[in-house]
Image 1 (tube, rainbow over the protein chains, first blue to last red):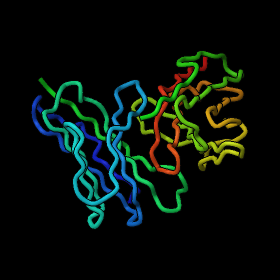
Image 2 (cartoon, chains in turn orange, cyan):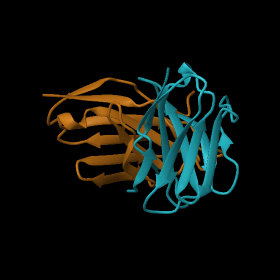
Image 3 (cartoon, rainbow over the protein chains, first blue to last red):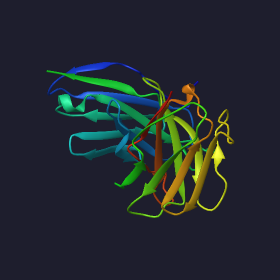
Length: 112
Length: 115
């Protein structure tokens, strides 16, 4: 089992819809969870962080964390074509020092 | 967020030469920086963790003598690709760790092409 797993996609949603991106992780001791957005040919950009169970909202983005089920998700409301990118889930793994473990990313396509 | 710069943004070099890439944290001091490599349409791959004032920690399979990392100050880390080969052509990205958190902020990346 991979330490951080994401469906590679592509996930296609129509403009204006809600995009739901999911991530599962293997380490029950993980405490810090992040979502990064990466446009093609560019470096990743941090868009959300979450540390406690429940929801965290920031504009059109909502991160959801469920430590008991070991998953973290990202919801994007009112999806726009400019949201089309690869979304990377990152988690700290116990014993991993200061580094983050990244999933392979989910490609999101928002269609007109 | 945080502002991280990388230089150069693109570099083309001949096989056998060395290339140095700089990563700067512009708005806070960073004791820890990270170096990643990403091949086209592939995942982000951590190469090494750069610690200010001490030796870098390399991931398994990454040759420390080929990828030299120096983190001589709290705002600058450098990656030198020595004796570059065409298979080293890739997108090299640094990131900066914020304080004692796990948050990482990425630089814009350096695209290396070895001919």
